[in-house]
Length: 102
Image (cartoon, rainbow, N blue to C red):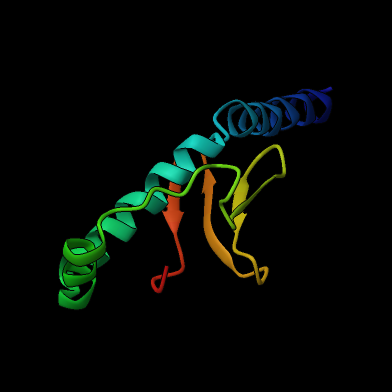
């Protein structure tokens, strides 16, 4: 009987963690926001990118033109570039940008 109770408690804990991961999976907008922040910080450090922005202006990429693809795996998600390289991943409502040469 004690083993059964211990098993039920362990399954409840694993199920609770799984439900928390599922319910806090980051949305595509959150990935885009994190990638945009990373790109902005990289452009602020890059003198040539600042010069290009001054000369040619900012050109926004619409979601229809975006080369990034969102993939959801229910407990975590990732965004890949056009070559299939991972640009960011997220879980528990946090997004981490992995590709620094965005």
